[in-house]
Image: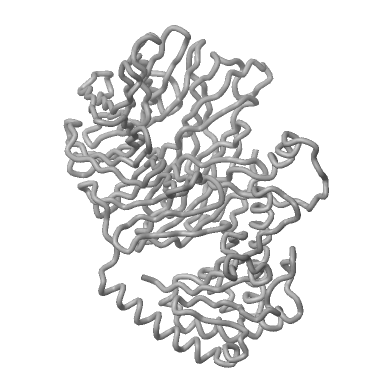
Length: 584
């Protein structure tokens, strides 16, 4: 089944980075997370995960007599959508695209293609699997929803030596003999593998498992083209961690029940497998002790089922690794979590070639923080993706950090480069004030030293619930754009982005907070787009082409409502702003 992905600029996009360390937090409405990360060929960093998005629909006046009916009405309008973000070396967000699918979904894996594009793997929340192929600008080239008629779940997407990918996951048993993909099921859940060519075509799909509950966790390609799969099997009496070797066509070569344990004994959960430079393999597991405190276990083995090393790393606090990679000198870095009674932090561990702990660092705040994935960069630094929760907040946010080889956090640009950027900003600020001297004198707009335009004329505010430009607004923004855009084009090499940001006041009838925020988030994006479209349409084809690379739009709902004293200025809150961001 082929589907079409529409990627749009994300709503309510905020980011914060420290002046000293490479740590980027991307805030979006409600929960969001990043699950995989990679380095692009231009040395930028890309990561994928999900953000919660609102699917617009026509307004309704329908009322509900109970909360359950109301929540059911929202269930098909708001949910997770796969999201790709791209970050430069100054910890600045340079791209954020969200999949607008009819079915809510999450991305779990990101793989680079030879043309600097991506394979993205994930699953829909109603139980189908999803693979998409994108170009270097995150435009969709190919996409496919696939799987069985039952509930399926992807855990990873693995790059293969022929440029294709292997989807690894689980599928609930199919007993339908008319199912063209699987005539019969094996058990409750089964290991589910699908191999794709580099063009994105399915080469084969197969199930493996027992009469019990089997789950495919991860896989890696061996030097000879065979594939090692890590899985689990659970029944009422025992739980196994299994290693399976299959051919490139999916035929089983051997199966090793590495850990066989009864339910009374300690639980072991596999998380990640990698191939080392010596063509052996390391799998990272979470080992639980007698009091159910988890710690890290690493197992090294070869292609012939020989266990070369089995090491447990005891830590003061419960800890686990979600991902692990090898440096060129044979050392390894793993990332995951460490937790106590009060909070969870992101964990980074440096290990030697014998899997002994050399160093560890914890990163995070007072709430829930976790690292899910890492990639080793060209300069032996490490980019890490995960989740950060702000203090006094219940919402999870996307988080990207960059670490040195010793697990310390990378420092950002030097003071000298920051000073140069500041000088450019001050010069541009002065020239913009000269360019718009008449508008400033008429109090139609204000420009601050951060190069943000506030349109202060009340005639430029939006009416309640409206996003269409009035005749006065349209005339003003057309005149404004004809002066601003050609002027900024003269500084094209120094500009990072031109951002049109939409805002609203906080009211929306007598709706509860969640619905007010969602409705206003959509309205703020529509206001942003109305101004964005007007600015774009006033330009020549040459300038329009340039704007497609630099101009973006965002909606902030009522999160930045204008205040007069303690009260909200609702009229002034219904506005747009324009911000110019220079390259670091």
